Image (tube, one colour):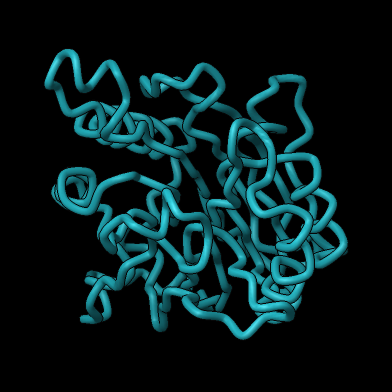
Length: 269
């Protein structure tokens, strides 16, 4: 089977009290970011209808999940290039986020190809783990992201069994709100992060300055990750920091993260 090369991006789009931060000044920078990099697959967190409009304007060939569950409109969604992929199935899994509409959002995509007999599939999933300053964590002293990562692993492993595809490529990405335990738990289960896989340092993804004073004063942290199983081989990855956008505004308080993959290569890494 020939390998297929695709680009993916995870993007926390940044809302403040349910409304886009630094709006409308960020509209053009976000549009410039998406039209410049045109990811084949885009996973978003903190979605809003205004962001959705920009995505469709920047990526007119992309489809997305249309569902009545409000989390698909206000928290996470997955956009894919309809010229490259066919959506087979989609769904959500409750992995224990404290925020009521957050879930593990997922789609099963089939790569469109002119080759006969090939049917390479990709399971794409995204989540936004709970912030470490959440009142539940401060009260119990229990790391909520450990539990959420463990439940993510269980869900991804269930998908691999459900779809009965021994070469199913699995991608998981999003804002994990931490740089150690979720990454450790997922890696131990066979889902390595793209930077580690290609021997690159994981660069900070938050805060991207300038955003707002309450974000700018925070220390640099790597919160946004893209991870894969052994049937997706990363070949290039980057944190999109300090983009030169019109007006000098950052695209978000988080940096988008992007990776180029070869799918169908059956890598052993």
